[in-house]
Length: 54
Image (tube, rainbow, N blue to C red; front, side, top):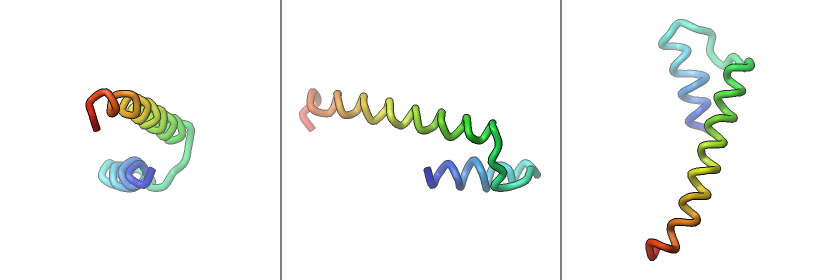
């Protein structure tokens, strides 16, 4: 989540000349998308790791 704040709310808007740290519907959807991706990736890893012998 720290990377999302740094990248999505600070660095990218600053480079594009947009207001930084602006929380709106788009940024909320972006956060939910990143969190969902992380949950799915973590679940796949949790299922795959034992099968790979780790």
